[in-house]
Length: 305
Image 1 (cartoon, rainbow, N blue to C red):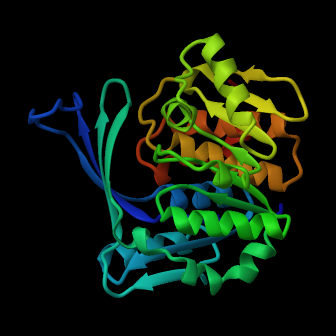
Image 2: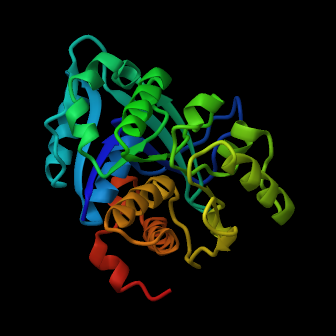
């Protein structure tokens, strides 16, 4: 397996199960409460590590209970933690997550805390780690200026990049031009190019437009429909999802991205890497919680869907 550097967020997820996700102004009585290590960056780092890769995680946490607890959890995952920054002023990031007990769908509010202060100056201190990576995996729960700096550094040194453009927001053409592979879901695709890919025609149109903006390939994750792939080397295709009963979809996208990066770092072809990532994500939605739901590589071998 190759070397993966994940640059991103570390949060603690405060998760409440509920028979329904409340509407604005509505109060509902919830069920079980759990506190789980999360954040898109952390989830993707854990996923890539459980897939068998050599993973370094670059993030910033607060000097508080949540930050210390997160680091202790990451130590159990064989992740290189030598480049985690401690913010002595601001608190660690937290996410409040409501999970619908019936559908498994979720609603999330994030208080970024120290994640919002992972700076370019911080990245300058760990540039060598990024330059020596095989793949950089990055998201949008840290400052966009930091994301741009990492992508520019990677491009300059011919390091392959995967951008998971979540949470959804507008991105400049300059930033997108530095991305090798981008992995938006439906709403993130709409934010990027103004087309919501809810039917075959719109999926194709969105894929064609977005492919013009990146260096190599676009992967639009479509939930239970699967993943739409369009690359500059091959014609487009829809790779189907696995048929499973979803309990909690909280970390499905993160699992997909972590396993995708791991498989590509192991020199798998893109289509094969996507199929492996789809399988891992399918397993994850059958379990509760973000990081607790992330499968280890051996679980994929026994998954017969």
